[in-house]
Length: 208
Image 1 (cartoon, rainbow, N blue to C red):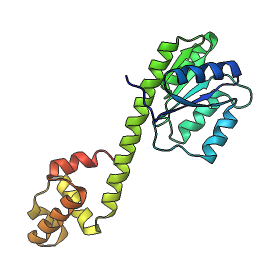
Image 2 (image 1 turned 135 degrees about the vertical axis):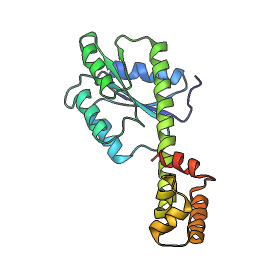
Image 3 (image 1 turned 90 degrees about the vertical axis):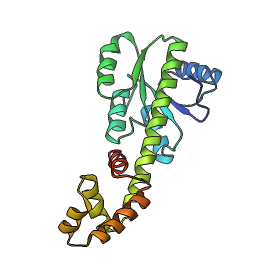
């Protein structure tokens, strides 16, 4: 997998030597990183500068003084950030069962210390790919919602019935309008939603 040049990896670990080693490893693979000595520092960074549209991933130590990696993970999950910010836990042998449980709860993966450089970078690049696809899907949903917001109430009523597979005549009867008016609304819906058929429209709306 080719490195994602625009990606950003966050490192959160209270051990300075681990942070420095990971930062060096990522630089050697042309990956940019920011590192933090605590969960509190990282949360402050997010508060001051929310995530943008570049792919991200988080390397997170399980055990840290103050706010633990476990608590930070839960907070990120509550904010709905795990899709666009995949979390890879860095764990000691004693924490492996905990890390396995965290993967079941939405963490991307875990790497046991001491970790293999190649294996870790491979997992990071996969996580960045997941982040990129999640960001692109998020953008598509936002664009789709903007298109729907541009529809009139009548157009939305027609669209719902078109997606249900109702013929124009039945739509006209249900809405107490003429078939010709249904055809006009249907054409406008297709134009605004940038589709050419009812099937394409139905498939598009499934992305919401």
